[in-house]
Image 1 (spheres, rainbow, N blue to C red):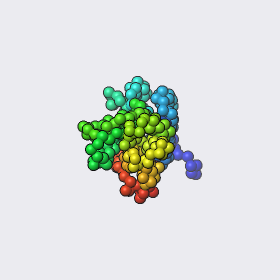
Image 2: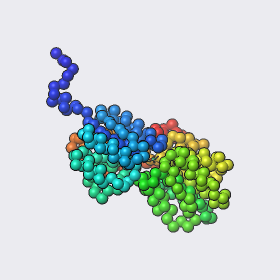
Image 3: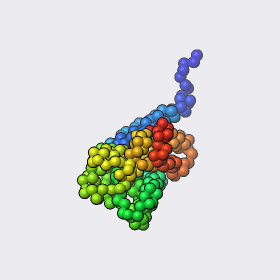
Image 4: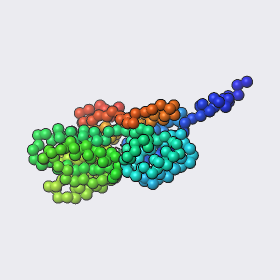
Length: 308
Ligand code: GYE
């Protein structure tokens, strides 16, 4: 008789892998897509996912991780809100003998053996691409060009590295100068509020270019510009990072000039890595996702292809 029950040995073999994932928050369209991708990929891979949202608070990430250790999950994945302060908790995880995958943003630790692999984008390169666009767009201008910058979350890898890459690429270009810069937390409302304060400066100080560390902040800034009677995309050239459908719509409408892609669909790669670890295979220390830059010319045609 087939009871539908597997004998104990086989049952052990098909016992699903349990993955504890500490997601840093839900600040942006990118983040929503990232969370959805990870949930969906876990389902498809037959991996049991315990996802905790830390609402931008590193302490909440620590609490979630301690919970994962107590419930003895097979693998822990962390999307770190900021890059410092991770050593002690990573040591706790190591003591419990649980392998760790860092996803999306990275951690600043001296001992890189504290995690198995880091899956995510090259944020420095994204900053470089944004600056290349600005340099090219402004190539016929010799007068001083004021650039405003909306930074993301203070202390987060994408904000730090995008800022560094952008500055590095601007290099010694005398006339391209960042004259205003402030964090706006990667949120649309933050982008709007901070842009408003930029525009409270006298008109002659208004920027000619805006570099926003993500699309949501750029979209917020577009709102603030319109309220101030500025035409975004022509009075002020805007370049941002992520490549969300909403940013593509703004590009097609002429309000945003260029978007550097940052791929949030990390779920499939993460689940693959989890399975490899459980199968005892070694992984590369770093897995980078390939990314592009898009401008207004292609935006209209590309909107439909955007998956986030
Ligand atoms: O660019 C931004 C999000 O860590 C790459 O975080 C991610 C960044 C992304 O809030 O939109």
